Length: 467
Ligand SMILES: Nc1nc2c(ncn2[C@@H]2O[C@H](COP(=O)(O)OP(=O)(O)OP(=O)(O)O)[C@@H](O)[C@H]2O)c(=O)[nH]1
Ligand SMILES: [Mg+2]
Image (cartoon, rainbow, N blue to C red; front, side, top):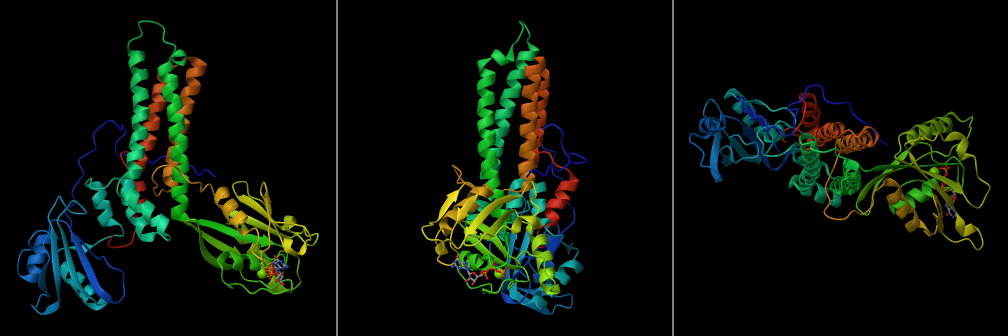
């Protein structure tokens, strides 16, 4: 499942022990509508940068009072009132971006919002790029990178658990745990380096209880961290579950049962479903996208054949495939059509057990026998889906995470173990120390201690405008 991204091209700081560079405060003032587009009760136009106070003065004829909402008329160049609303000013450095920030709370008309933005641009501001407010918050040290990402994840969260985890990340819980891990690596590195620097006697690191104890602890932390991150990633990205099987196996019935809604047409005519049908559900807080597909078989009917093609394409994109068969018949056609991908998870579902005398719902490894009609065995399937996804309950608090974080953690872990291997093979403490340093750097990418401009561009460009 690993998808290692290559190392960034240019790095901001190479050594995590070096202090952060002082973030360059931009001399440009940016502006954007911060509320969603369309009509609403209130629309907020936000500015950040050195001109913020000046724009307020030009717009309203007076300087804003810090952090105190006041009613104001916003005027255009001809002194005509564009709108009236609340003005709020947050002087640097105690603002979201760390710069002077001005908020204009106007009536929720897209027309007046655009007139306000245009006026701000006339007064020297420029349109903000997507995510530029949060990027500035990161660059000025108000938020670290994982926290800035959590802002976007909170906005996009699709379940309550995802939102709770995002707010926990935004409040720094995730970053704190990453820092703790970095501290553990640093601690070991300092110990090893100190021992190398004073080689009064031959050092045998492997016989050193302190080193083995620290390594064991590191291993535990890495394992726990990875499980939490995997859960956090799933909360953010959700799981795509595709239902495939032969015609009439009961795919659409199962989709309806899982979604508790008669979403898909069910009939006893094989080949009922043609288009792929999607339905969003939630299993214990995990956002799951269910995809029902056409029954797999050779067909002369062009529409059905197209449906089968789409079913196979959907199966290719799944995180988890449910291979559904009719347990009341000898149904084994599915396998010829399904090309199993190595990094994909599979569960085999034997359906219609209500038709088999004496058969009850059960799970045997990756096979679940159930009835989509009566619902018997559905809880077993839900549990298996959660398990297969790696969405296990984790101890301690939750946080939201991204694949990028998992990749960085995996790289850090690889460095630590390759250091240990070199220690075992060559008794080389120096090589272990070097690998520990590389592990620290990899972890530093998570919170943004070590970043590249490419990476920052990639992250913030996926934010919405005004955030
Ligand atoms: N007794 C019984 N009948 C079932 C069960 N699941 C589905 N059926 C019946 O089997 C028939 C086919 O069900 P569908 O859900 O349409 O099957 P499908 O796999 O979506 O079929 P296609 O869309 O044609 O590929 C219908 O008559 C369902 O009522 C079950 O668990 N028990
Ligand atoms: Mg169907």
